[in-house]
Length: 61
Image 1 (cartoon, helix red, strand yellow):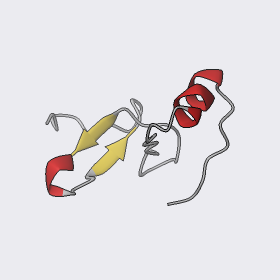
Image 2 (cartoon, rainbow, N blue to C red):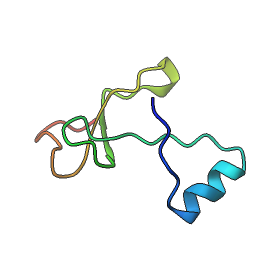
Image 3 (cartoon, rainbow, N blue to C red):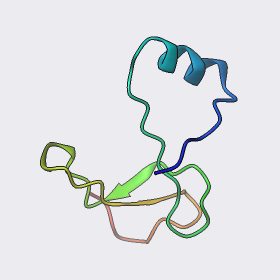
């Protein structure tokens, strides 16, 4: 993973608090993604992430 500059004051506050910030880019275009498929964090599976534009139809988990 690569470091992402924290442009948002909210993200900067989270990082300075010691919280782990997990930013996941869309697997198609690289923009911030909010839809993860196959995500099982308790089993260390990060899945595949998509933005709203590239979210596959009918794939809801």
